Length: 508
Image 1 (cartoon, rainbow, N blue to C red):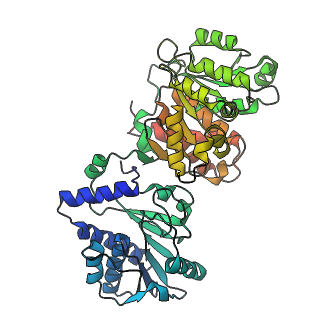
Image 2: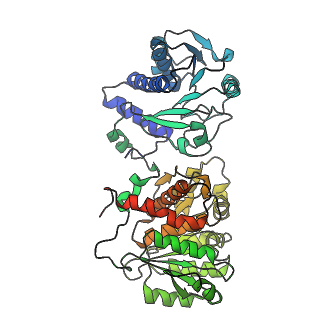
Image 3: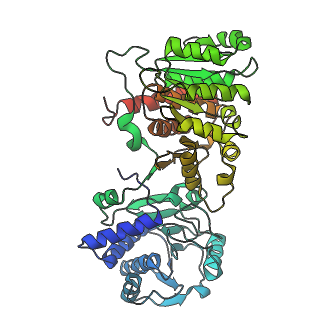
């Protein structure tokens, strides 16, 4: 699929397996990597009057030595700056020995306006902050405003977490190899990478499959085979029945946004479950969306028995407290499958916050055999209320935090933000990369919850439904652009959904 993301350790294993399988050795891989970077430099910056190549002592630096040699052979003026000597007998040492340029110490690094920097000091495996000469070179390049081509990752960015370790170069282009790393997509690293060029250096798909990575870049290739398309003989209830709980008379809009999004995402029937005192307000605004009173758990039980609904959204505008907890426990205890028909529950906003003082009761309910799939969609604040110890652990990346929360809660976690992470209890995770700032508007999250519930109602598995919902939501927002408000999103989804359903990859 090529949407797998490799951790630094998995990338090292991919190198090892490729070398063991032959015919390429380590230096052969390094030469291919350097050639890919040199080709990008020559194609994108043909007018650069001078190229400064900054090399560290490891394999990332070895790639840099190859780049410097190839650029010089192509007639480019190159200045080579080095920090430390490669280990004797290493692939980087071979690359350094084959590079005829004068090696200048990084401590003396100086550059001029109009030149270009190719940075190969440290790659994806960096684990400690940049300091000394490396940090000084960052300041020089930044102050001059030089364009930067980074090899693998901008030096200073963690490939594991996307964190900036001390300081980092801001690249115009980052050339990486075989597969992207989490640090290419997680903030703030993503902002430092610029355009990402993925180069094939001979690490085959079979090698990646043997590693079996569990982290992915979110996109249609990940979930399109499970995307629901109605059969020719479908009727509305065969397309699933999604349901959204409404808040009181002054807080009904969020539920209606979720309900409309569920309908647009393909659910055949959608019902707003409303307290008695909000029935008239909701009725005045609903047309194709059905309405039913759900004041108590008994009302909910009667609805479950009568209509056998498929999925639920609880939280948007609902209110925080015991009523939310009671409804959640009733739904998670209702069972899954043909008898109950509940495919999943999407818990958002007030539904999440309602469990801040007793999160373990929610997690226990989600762990019970036969419980419907639970999807939770917290932003950073809500995540911290439910998982305070995980949220406060500075040693964990956003990816690791989402994974830990999913395992603890036995739920799919959609950890929202510009770099939304979707994690499943089985360890799979996806990082979204098509988000847009236009989505930072009131009600946007309510729409997302509704999209996921609509896909769940149609039988899409929870992890795939959450990934698809996040991507569709972001794609619709990106295409709409400036001026977006939450009410625009359900209609903005239509061309996105049309393209997805017309794809040859959709299982029909």
